[in-house]
Length: 293
Image (cartoon, rainbow, N blue to C red; front, side):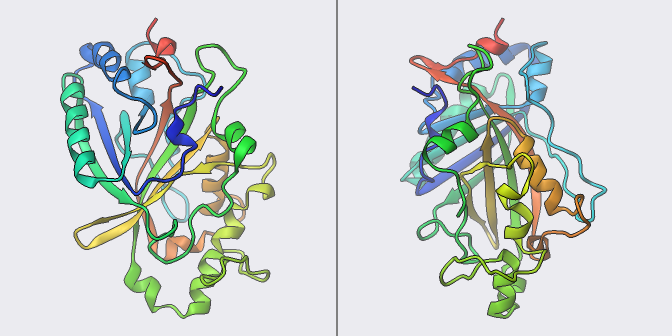
């Protein structure tokens, strides 16, 4: 049986709340993480730990690294602050708010909350543009192999690595495009979700086609739209047994492979980008033996 946090392979919930914390008091890290490990069930609440936490504790998590700094790419993408991340899942937005407040109280001795974003499932899993999100997500055994680390070590088996980006959409611009132009942004038709055979090289599907990479760049996406005041976009959440596949896709999107940038950047831009380690989970909560020596 998998030791991975169950949320990684579950369907996207009706409502999500994403919490990002930074270190405030390093002396309390171990105590706070130990407390949090008992309330994170991996299903209703998933948790990720950033590199700064691990290095501050003088520990190591093989495969964990910083989000890549691609600020010199044709479309700049870079890391933003974030040391601890929570993904709260459920059917009631108010209940998620209160659950998040309880987490904030436990985390407060060591961490400061710097960002909270509410996400939701739109229709049957659409981006706010109306296009299906995560069409080519791996399924069943391939999803398990893609998302979770196995066979590395007892302490790390069941671990996952998550890349989190908050994307801001310019829906006014996108909706000003003709239907054919919109389809060419994604490389799929909105009506049928079928791939367009002669889509331009800049189409998103051509930038991130998983089997076009060597090795294939499979990721398990669990993204959700978000809305705040008059802004909206996509909270992009991508799990893998390493960051390599996500990074390969991102570098091609920003044009580092062939100079062609993803058409998504014509109407959307990332506001935040972070990498986290999602520890395995056992009967009594998160298994943090890797960083609790």
